[in-house]
Image 1 (cartoon, one colour):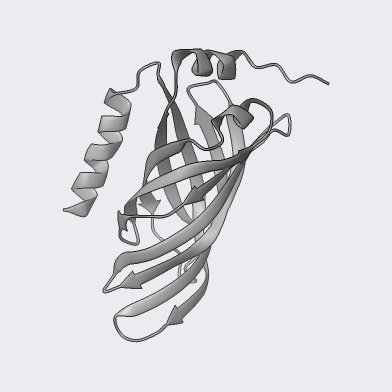
Image 2 (tube, helix red, strand yellow):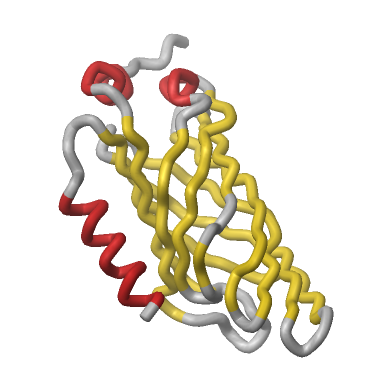
Length: 170
């Protein structure tokens, strides 16, 4: 049932893509670096992601996230992670994320843009909403699962135009 909700959320983001939102699409690989089984029902995971992304502002990025997830009975109970996406000119944006609802292979993730350089500076402080879904599961070492992450942030038309037309000064 949760996967159906996540899929519905992806379609909702795509359907409602209007000019007053910036949309991020991120494709990456997700690995569990450390697993601590606290008991039969509770697991603590340190993880990372690495990948590439695009946005409706016409910007391509590389980057990833590092953080932790705590599962209780297979459901995400707590999480915290920081993500950095960097474009080819070196400008970057940093997200602070906390998954609210999810499992190992899908979840809904509100996040906040906490820092940015270049075009991303004016988005600092904006709250956004994203969803992730696993495309292909983990290998035998809990590494290299492929994921899709889609997010949107409400911004003004003029802000989106400034993001699209930004030229970095040398």
